[in-house]
Amino acid sequence: MQLKDAKRQWQLRHCQDQAIKHALSAPYPDYKRNWKQTPWLAVDLETTSLEAKSGEIVSIGWVAIENGAIPLSSMQRWLVKPEGSVGQSATIHYLRDEDLAKGQGLRHALTALATAMSGRVCIFHNKQLDISFLEKAFQEQFSIGWFWPTIDTLKLEWKRLQRSGTTHFKRNELRLSNCRKRYQLPDYPLHDASHDALACAELFIAWASHSGGLGPSLKDCLRWS
Picture: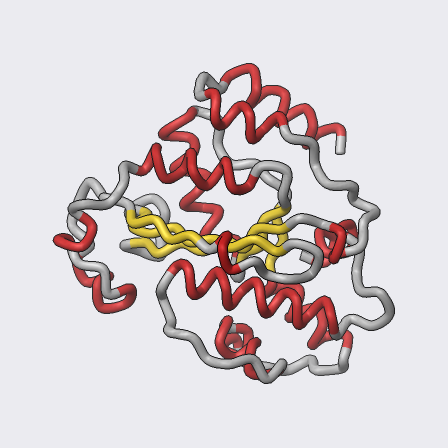
């Protein structure tokens, strides 16, 4: 925790944006808390590429988890106006240049996301991809890079399959839609940031609810992902 706290203190000193500073100043949830006692925020991005170096964020979606349930009123989807064209990525997320022309600037969208994340732990599915884009975006816009406590439902499900004795499985079995099928969760439209965030939140709740006993603590979730 000392290294993490030191990084956050450095960010607070160097960040000039008051909304970001306020989010960084919010205390972390108690790591010993049960998952139901922990405030979460499931987040998803749509991008123009799978590589942060060459791609841009075009949509950010999120939804909260409170006391083990999802308040749908917390569900948000922000379209982000990119600097370049979406190109062939439109065939994946169905967002065209004309759709994004009225989108928010990246800085404004990141500020809204940081405000929503304040005092919460973030949940992603395949966090490595999303965080690579957020690291780049926060560094460019606020000169602080990314840092929030974060868990990954892909890794949590991977560890669960391993503990159950499933040692050989294909990579696509860890896709969000396939993970949801194992818990008999319904299908949602793919590659919509708000729907994918909701799908991720529901997967996390299903995973935690099937973990036995009172379920995992926040510390467990962070350690396993």
